[in-house]
Image 1 (cartoon, helix red, strand yellow):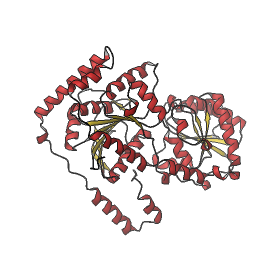
Image 2: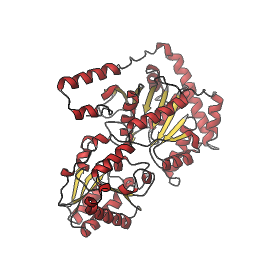
Image 3: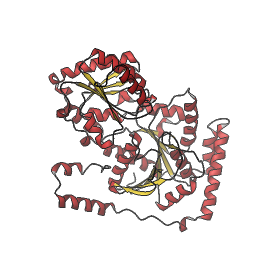
Image 4: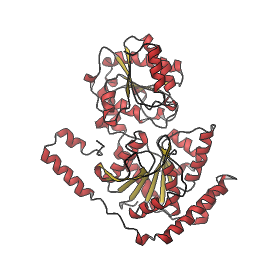
Length: 466
């Protein structure tokens, strides 16, 4: 087992200021790895005017590379065009391991390809589930097989996700680890005084897109409102399906029962959750679903469709499952509404008990430690010869295998040309961020301004944006 600090580069199209589970995972995992003594930099595409190099809280360095966005915050595939800038970053930051996140991320696939051409160790984390029958799934599965043919290790966020990834990419299961997502439990404390006792409030926090089951939500809400006069809905999130909810609300005249908040900032998520009694998730596919963990930490009973890795996330007394069908969602909501009225009689259903149990189950420090174990497992592996890399790519299919070998060969040759034009010795090494000095200054400022006991307790957790 090695114990030397590592230089790690996290790469994904999905990072702040965009919001989502992948973005949260990247940020919090990186902060904890920094606290464990490693150097972490993140590479993502530019967001509007945010481009160039930025430092976030805790000394986390982020490269925002200009790129053309094509769909759902993913950048336009350029294959070899990003090699020069990725090579500059990897050499400047003296990277040991390149860690790509999310199968939908173009930057992730390109960074792993270029890193392998440079002989760097690579890790891939899959955050999604994909099918095997639709055209987009088939194409993305082939791309994933190409990328994962030459990575040292893969990580999935649930056992269901692992099975899906192993089948999609034809991987050896021993090369895939399961490391779940987590939350900072201190940021999701229950607040019973925030809810309105006159109502039973159902909260929905989600991107309003087809994959999140918004059509199921639209069908179930008017039926629940008709059956239960004391029920109201609070919906946070935005997306193309929002218009469907607005039209349904107008058609059934439920303006006083359905509150639409629009996009909710991460800092405001808890204040929305603590207003509710029940959290509803109607996703059609989900590898983990960090939203239900946040809701349970705030003390809400959870109702969710039983899809993907969701059954692995919470114990049975915290969640009620439903098939992804309208009637089943309504039945499960009615069951949860009945449990809300019985909560005072059952201490194991109290918000405080929910919070204490979730805090024990999920921790970013644990995620970082397990990720670190993967890094140390691969960092000492011997680099295979180039012909072995071609053999792995060739096994990806009769036609695709030859194409993948061609792509890998061209990328390797581009790397040789770049090494001739810009030798490593001529690339200036970036100065290391002085994490010890940074934390000393932060601690001194807290003492100078008189931090409370609560803030001192939170200082052991990863520093967060805003």
